[in-house]
Image (cartoon, rainbow, N blue to C red):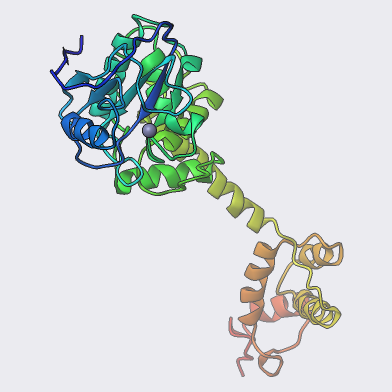
Length: 329
Ligand SMILES: [Zn+2]
């Protein structure tokens, strides 16, 4: 139960709502702004008082302002809605997850008295008006999941709202394996978008599902799967590179490579199958590189004592030459 306070305020004319059927979520777009400041500001604008029906401070104290009296929070949508406002400016700051959970509990508790806790009964101010309210960083999907959870309170996601290198690395991995972070990219903050990417990854790989306790929490199972996939991708890339066929696009390079290989075969420096492979366009780049190193170490023509292998072996056996191709005279 969230403890709710109903402060005594001076109100102008208020009218009771008859059929409350939805909740609209707001922020005051101010990092620090108490319900009293809101009330005084709105009164100053000539309104009957604070436009929101409910308000929560960052210290998690919850207030009923207009309550079931019609609010002034979303033009054209005030007659049948609660206007819940969470202190802060979520265009420039992030919602602390502890605060979000408490705010969601508050919204659940008050809404459940009037309408069903289903997605379609909750909207952001921006869904019904031209505003960014409740801010671009407000984690809407996370909030909706908390508000509409079958059992409250939903387990806390320790990653939610976190910022830093650890989050950035996780985001880099998610992107590498094909998950999308279309709006914020790898910004180092674990918000709604990262949450959805983790959930999508977990569904694809059978790690968790919407009913799972750790759905959206990148725990050990998720991290291990991410790492395994990335290692496999790197191996595959290396494998692809290894299997690239050596076949220069320029005819003159092709010709000189052929000459080089042929000469090495003729001198018995490399096996003939390499030349065959080259001629059939089957010689892999990796093998060519090894052959090339080997061929480069071949003695120059002038150093070579040109002999047929059999003769050579014969000479060696008879001790006429040493291992350096030099006649022992
Ligand atoms: Zn708003």
